[in-house]
Image (cartoon, rainbow, N blue to C red; front, side, top):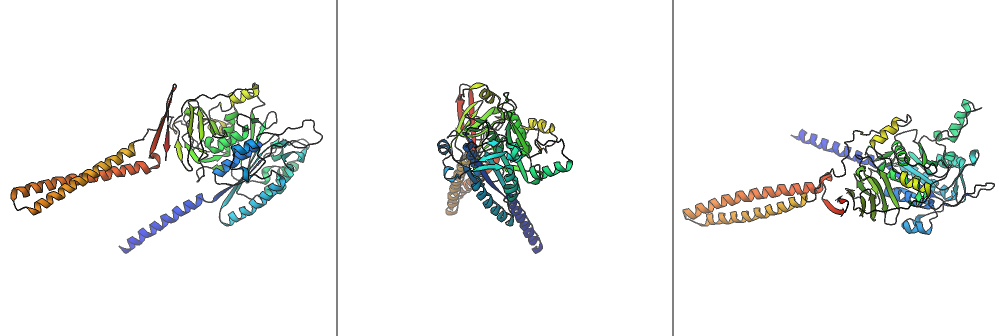
Length: 534
């Protein structure tokens, strides 16, 4: 008997250790961010094609910072926010630092020290390094990204900054014209004539990301070699697409991890319908060579934001913005594709879809299942062929497992994620039954049964008292029969009440059967609803 008890104790300890180890595994990654946005035009002498100042690079950096904050990242924001951006991102204005090389050096030195502390503590640091602004193409090492106090050249990036950022993974995201000529994730623009194999190998080892196998890159370029801004988004188109994918719209297999192949396919689908070459963004994507399936973000880890669950492709093209007019996410999913997407918490959000518009205010950690929204048409007037091409062409191609599978099959260099292309993995828009009153009915039933049990219990006790206090046969017989009847009814009612209470608790606490509050919306085009899980 004693050995059996010890065995059970040992099993309990093993289970506790395993649970602790599993919990620790989720706690071993810490996110960091450096978000740089510089609207200023570079001062380049001897050039006829002088560049003008940008308008939304500061908004790009603020949007990226806001998203990284939702992940719980330790993020440095390097930008000069104009008055409009400060109004739309009020909580970030006090954190903004000058987008200068001097400030970048300070942040890199700080992060390098923190990375070392993390490693000693058994934590893997992951860094997202983001830049939005002007890129200038020159000869050789003269290509650069424009900082406020000077050029961020390829030499500085490769010899001063990247070698000191020893994160487990470093995800480099650049939204700038000619960015590929500075970063060169692969051997771009390398002439093969009159160059030996040794020369090519030496060039790749020094001037491509082959030097940094832990570094991945996402770089925007356009046919016109211009960074594309759009006042409908009030930020760069590429940045908007990147953030949409990272928030979960690109998570084709629903594991909460957004990988490079998923994001690349999502970006391809988003831009496939854009006809005007000046507006169509093409993207250079390079996954870390040390792990082609490294996740850029892991949305399954605890976050500071909220979640919109099962954002069904049956909604059509979906666009989400907050109450400041800041774009949050845009997607057009295949009909059976219904990803969970991360959104900001504790602010009013507006979900626009083919069915209409829905307003909601999610709390931190809240998970909301979107069924549909009230139909209210909104319109954006197109101005010229380029804007019309963007308005009609962006997110015109549905993205999901089927598109993803076709995309990666055509690309031999991508390492795909497991994706279910049978089309029956995700529920349709109205696929989930509403359980809006199940738990309340169970609790009301439990209360009624328990009250009845108490009443019959009191009657049974009174009958027992009469039986004990009388010496007459007939009254004693009647009291005994009454006692037995009322006791049986009391026990049955009490048991039923306990079962009903248990069912109510199960409906209330089980994750897939939360207490659903059904909010109905209607319009002349139909009735729609939202289910909210508390």
